[in-house]
Length: 174
Image 1 (tube, rainbow, N blue to C red):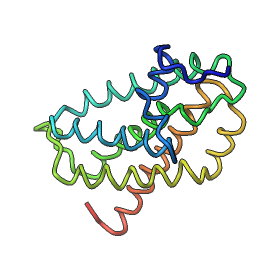
Image 2: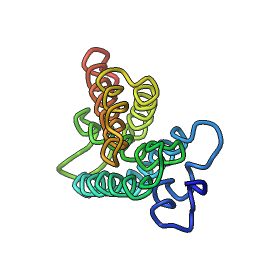
Image 3: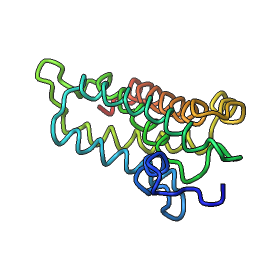
Image 4: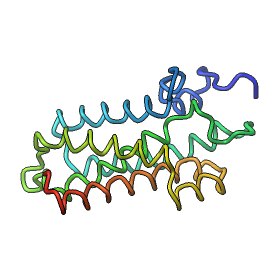
């Protein structure tokens, strides 16, 4: 397909996260940054963790579907302009924030440290998404479907979250 992405197609528009994937130099980082800024709005509006989890599930399922649709006719399934998978991956890291003890479940409030934790998680996610240590690299190379495009980013998100939890256990940042 020579005209990928065609932003007039809804699947292409959403897969590029409204064209953010077309930004020059490291479109995956731009997509992840867009996910971070979207999460900052989530914190600012003090939306509940349950609302976050529902949103995360919708983003993950939507990403899998959109990646499947957008890449139907492509030889390269994980096209660099597709960044909805990075948004899903970075949002996966944010589900670890309550485990740091900086979300108050009784009041359903995000603390000020949530911004810092989200920023650290964003940076860790980018490291894991770029370096792709095993088993992330295995999934990235072997699975070339909509699920495969998203799965390596979800794994990078889990690795980033676990890394911050482990690091916080020893250093006690939060």
